[in-house]
Amino acid sequence: MKRIITSVRKLPLELIFWIGALIGILRIDPYDTHHFSLCPLDNLGFSWCPGCGLGRSMSLLTRGDFQESWSMHPLAMFAFAVIIYRIFELIRNNKTIKHYG
Image (cartoon, rainbow, N blue to C red; front, top):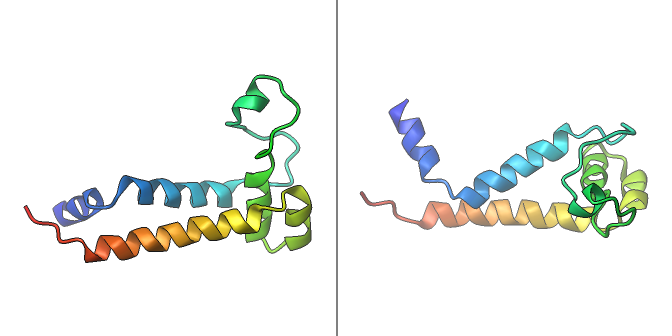
């Protein structure tokens, strides 16, 4: 158990954040009419935001509904690719770092 805790502590916080974000995207129900939003513009009452729908669009992308994903937010495929690329880069960089002490 101690080895697991020390190996998790060596992971970069950014890597944990992005993996958590992907898990959150997978758990979103894109077909639900009422959804939780962290968008500050939506919480302030604005009806338009350039990023609104991106999370639901990425969730549709993971479910294979590409056309609906594109119609909800066209940048979802790009955002998903960037997140996956960043996760792989962080894992690759973490393998090359020597952890002394």
